[in-house]
Image (cartoon, rainbow, N blue to C red; front, side, top):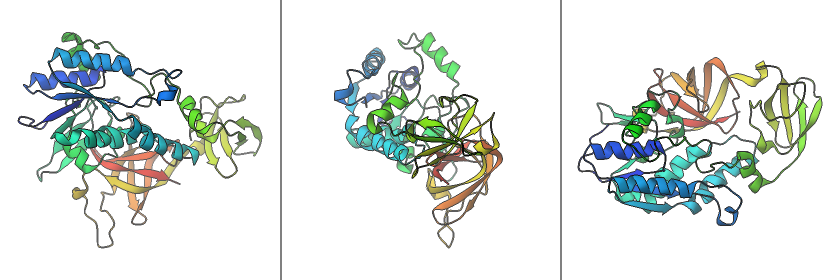
Amino acid sequence: MEDLVGKKIAVLLSGGVDSSVVVYELVRQGLKPDCFYIRIGQEPTETEDWDCSAEEDIEMATAIASRYKLNLEIIDCHKEYWDEVTTYTMDKVKNGFTPNPDVMCNKLIKFGAFDKKKGFEYDIIATGHYAQTEIDDEGRKWLCTSPDPVKDQTDFLCQIEPWQLRKAVFPIGGMMKETIRAIAEREHLVNAKRKDSQGICFLGKINYNDYVRRFLGENPGDVIELETGRCLGQHRGLWFHTIGQRKGLGFGEGPWFAIKKDIEKNILFVSKGYNPSTAYKDEFLIHDLHLLTPEAFPKDEKGVISLPKNISVKIRHTPVFTEAEITPVSLTTYKIKVEKPIHGVAPGQFCTIYDTSHHRCFGSAEITL
C-alpha cells in the first residue's frame, strides 16, 4: 500500500467487518483517519414496509469509530442514489438490459457524490473493497486484483474515474477473507462475526424483483421456446429475467434457460436442457470503453485506443477469468472473442477487462449485441 503518512484520510465505514478492519489497520500504522457512513436507504415513504439495516450499520460504525477515538460523520447521499443509480438501473431493465447497480454506486456515490459533499477535503479515500492498487515505474496508478479470487471486487470498481482511482486506497485488499475475520476476532471488534451483506449494496433483505416491481410494475407477455416456437406461458415482465437465468422461470418439463428478449413484442425466449448451447457465446461486442489508467493506452492515428490484443475478461462477479482477444471495430466499439464460450452474455452487462495474468484491471465496457 502506498505511503499515507502526512495525508488526510477519509474511511468509508459501512458497519461491516471489512471496513472496520480497514480502520484498525490504519490506526495500527499510527494514522488517524476520519470516518464516514454513507446513507443511501429507501425512500422515506417506503420505509414502513421495506426492511433496512441502516440503523444497525450506523450502530456498528459508531462503535468502531468510538473505540479508536475517531470522528464519524453520516453523509446523506440518499437523493443522489435515487436520482442517479436507481434511474440508471430502471432505465436499463425497462429497455431489456442487464445493469449492475453496484458498479454505478461505486462510481457515482461512494467515489462520486461523497467526494462532492466531503471527500474533496481529503487526499485519500479508504474503503473495505477487496482490491489492490500499484504504482508503476512511470508513476501510473493501476487497479489490481485481490489475492482472494472469490472476494475480489475489481469488477465492481471497473467504472470508477481515473481521478477517483488516484485517491482510492484499499488497506485490506491484499488479504484473504479468513485473515480479515481472524483480525476482527483477535481485536474483539464488535462486528467480528457479522455476516457479509449480499446483493445490491443497500437492499438488505429486500428482494430485487420487489425493488424493480415497485418502480416498473408488471407487464405480462409470452414465454416462447426458442427452438420450436411453442408458447409455454406468460412472464410478468421482461425486467424480472436475465439472460442465462435458470431459476425462477416456473415452467415444467425443465430445466429452462432464458436465452433472449424481444423488447418490442414483449417476448421472453427460453431453451430447454442442461446448459444448452444457445445459452453460450464465443464472441460479442462491447462499446463505450472506460479505462482506469488511460495514459497507459495511447490512441493510434485513427483515434483508436491501443489495447493489448490478448486479455482476460469477466462479465459477472465470479472468481473465474476467461482468456480472450479484443479487436477494434470502430472508435467506440470492440469485439471480444473468448477462448471458451461464456454462459449468459447479456446486453447491458459490464465486461471487465484485465491483463492475461489476471492482475491489472484495465477497465470495462458495456456489452452490446
